[in-house]
Image 1 (cartoon, rainbow, N blue to C red):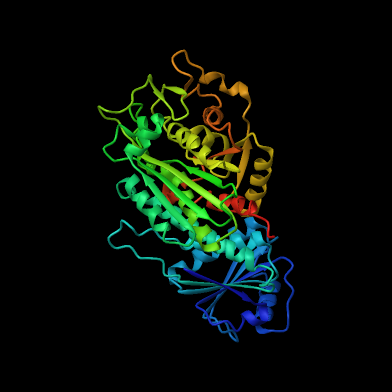
Image 2 (cartoon, rainbow, N blue to C red):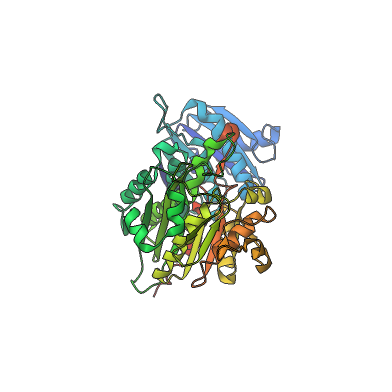
Length: 482
């Protein structure tokens, strides 16, 4: 899908030739002397368009306008949530007509947030998964033009939004694929394909290299599956070599049965989404290649399956991590933290300015925050502030969670340096406390996306989060211009 930014007001929008014109209106709409403004004023005066977000008025072949179809979309206060509601309703209305071209026009200058939400909502509402369907109908919408009265001011936010959308769609594609079509080897090839883009390099390590590094925790998780593990290392080089990178570590469990501590059968198919952290890292690198910011970024993806077999790790087994710390595996379904801890130790070699791991880690985080916000854990004040700003700017929301030392008490064991699980209370926090043990040499943050990475039920599918959040955070750390 192609995007274009135009300098349009209501008068100019009336001359736009397109399959559908979505006119996005706020409560402060001011009519001008042109056919489109006149039509809008009459509709508002007659009460045909209610002053609440998501209200629509659909007009076929409007007289005096160049568009084949006009949809007036009420945004009311124009806030991001209202924009999302209005645009989603409008795209749902026109979807059956399968338009190929769509023009969105704001009645007045939008904020960068509103612009981003409008574009991302169009992309989300028109997204179609086709990879493993024999007779799937692909997305018909091929061109989206965005009209604003202040296009020069919004050129940078527009470019960032388009790159974010493309990164999100790559993340969704890989997360939505069934586990037999998204093995660790498939993920490795997807990462290697990204290396064809500007400024990106990729290296993939196999079992022997991982074993040589001493990643005993990662190896323990992978040993139950016949699928070979992959340790994927991506580099985006946009700044000087001596500029410390940001490191993003994505959990890449391409299917999680729970291992010997097997999960219940109900909804176990959704455990193909246990690699959404890895998918989000791929999505960020896709966006970085498009934007080419002045920063260095490293992506690390420890990827394997977690399956029960005669070779699988057992509850009570003790393994030695890359850091040298020993871990008693009390529950084999707490495997994400095991693959991540070795990747977090590996991250030390880059002497990073910041490290964030991204993982569908705990059901406890879903209970705490639902699907609205991802849980964010960090003891670094600067990182926490930057992530809070990125959360608001991207509208890919996260929420700060505690890391008090008292939460680590439950991880104590007599048989190793640390256990991989504590009790049920505060499960998302104790998981973060486990990871924190391996991050003492750099500023670190942890995103638990178990509630936000995908939707269940009739709307089942990956969301592509937190690509937008991560991209905004990374861009905020760019090297200042000389």
